[in-house]
Image 1 (cartoon, rainbow, N blue to C red):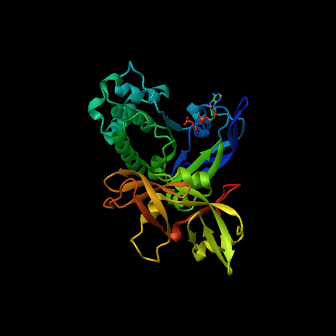
Image 2: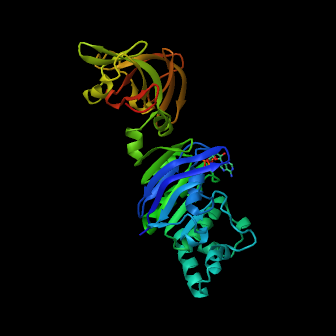
Image 3: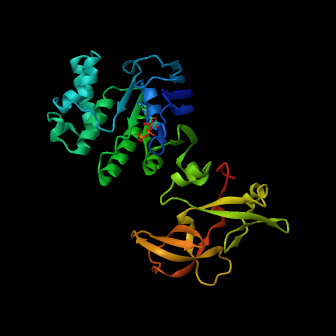
Length: 363
Ligand code: ATP
């Protein structure tokens, strides 16, 4: 059993308040991902859990024990770094064995654990090589192997895939997922890549400016973002935003844009009513827009002019101008849209998001 609890955690570097009152409960066997843009404080939070950064205030608990003052070596964690941090003069075997030797494990036990990890990672044939004789992906496996042999209570990953090319990154992502399914070790993983966060995380913590914005399962973040930042950060291409007015006519709430008027579904009408008479930010995901089929009056939507088309094979991204707003629509790859075309984009009223213009919180 290994759970990690973070309580009221703060980190200040002189004038920079890098981590602000973070509270998290990472459950046993959970794969928790911290994601956010550069400088949001995710690495600093991870490093405080690891013991590599001092804590300004608050607590980190591993299995109910406060570890604030415990050196990294005594925390029963293993960390995998972005740059792999392999010893260049040592063989793969010695790199993997090093942490165990330092901890005075017996030679036979070390050999057994290195072999076991090498089998899991399929690097048994590389054990005699030096790091410079390995590809980037193989180095990454060795770095993982070095963490696995320790049988730690918690794995900490600091952007471990960011030095790999795009294809290898996707492959290693799957390997990491398999590894976690197999070992079940509690893991905290830092990345700035929202796709990595969504695909790897049992739950994801979205951070911005040192503050946790939302914690939830990937689909929860996608379907019910807590605020405009999370809505724009999770999902690719990013959610479209436009400022609209909320008006009340004949007892019903209407969403009014520059050249469209939509009656929101009953499910959100109640929440929107409190904002009637005000402007709000409307969010629509590119995948929730489609090209309307001609004259169907049931299609709710708006007119748009195509500015750029991006054919991706499985979909076309249409960059359009709708009144003053620029939007992206992800549509069927067979849609014959050309630059300059004027078309009608239909939207799914059940998939609209609304945000307060001031607080940016979801409505
Ligand atoms: P990145 O993805 O770029 O690593 P991050 O989200 O991991 O970003 P942190 O590295 O945790 O962000 O940094 C958070 C803030 O703390 C940033 O403003 C950064 O400049 C600052 N910071 C980090 N380390 C130090 C340090 N040793 N001294 C001073 N400021 C620091």
